[in-house]
Image (cartoon, rainbow, N blue to C red; front, top):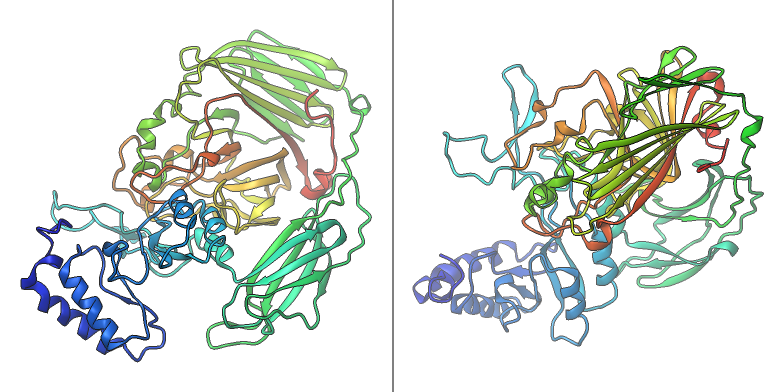
Length: 622
């Protein structure tokens, strides 16, 4: 019927009794439920005299509860202003002056697919004003149905999977929850939990151990929680403590002093973690359940000691018209002399790569990306790396124990230059530096700037030091604590109902993948950090192309290798809505110069744990 006053049933007197009947039955049915705190007149049903009447009836029948209705806007028959998908600047404008009613978004942070980006940014604004009182994420659950393929493979079916050909459908639009249909967790639920937590630690002077703890509960003090503190060094816990007798009244902020003594080791990162745990079991929550946490980097840092490369074993350099080969005591690295591609990295006789690092500017579109037409707007980056023209491949022996291979290329009809250098050290380290230099800046933002390489399929064990354990992104990493995590490569994959970009881990200090049976692996360290993901798929497997199609998890087939993405960064996932909103500007990659570096190092079990490998530092950019 639409929303226009001349056509909506909400403004047609003939439909007054129908509206009143529905409202009366709702109130009489639910009036004794203490969990009902606000009455709603409905959703997306137009507005008019019939809703004014239903609001008046509820106020007369139950004056104890407020009434809200989104389509009423700021008209008198809604006690709360409840816009849908209001953007942050709109919230700031609303809070800029005194209003006659609070604002609560009846829907926001559309959780479709890989989404719920910039939620912390929303709450940084919401918590500045009493007039801004939050919102309701759409939606709680993916609205899909369990199904099986003819071969018995399970998957979640959605709109478009039912009815004869040509049946109208919104596709996977109702796959927009914080959890799967069976209530298994999507990674963005961890972001919601962290942003929404009711206890917050505020740093006053981290160096001297002075903090504030804020209790954001309205009625509950913190006596039901135990506070556990720990100090870690590069992810390994050094010490634990607890705050005996700690408490804070509702809406109160109390000081907390935590004294710690550290004799810092060079190149070691120290982190302080606060964890708030339930003391006793309740019908729904067990004792020891973590309800809130905050983490801070301690200023106890000494620069890593750098080893003189001249003390390393010598390297031999061989170049033919087709191959560049650098040979060390236990390893050999080869490049194609014409394309500049790394073709082999052998250590103790074992091949570590199936294909060496290749530049990558594209990510498989998310649901939000398709909603804002990212594949069309930013499509020039899809094949930009593959269509580059290599203009020069050179090699130089910088020192007996250092060789550098340099590759220059042009892209996008000479609108950008790409320079890659590989510096090989006598111990087997390869430092990779990548620089993107546009000569034309009137181009769409980059979806991603990174490199991708492939490893043998049996390099299936993974450990990393960075944010985790679940996936995180530039605009969705508040809920991922920094630590050391591990598992299998398949553990990193998140099976969104409709396949799309997934599995990224942000702010990674280092990541190691290895063949557990053979005890050999490849270590990669960001200089200082990278984002990474690893899959038994290629990035293109998650990409449906320029137009969104009907796809499911059963469309993916495991590849006989491991794809490892080592990125400077990719743009945020967004989440303001899924039908046009783009990632916020601070989480995008506008066309300008970018450069980043990472270190590759082969290792065996006899060389030590990955955390030990990260301590051995050499010049990053000779």
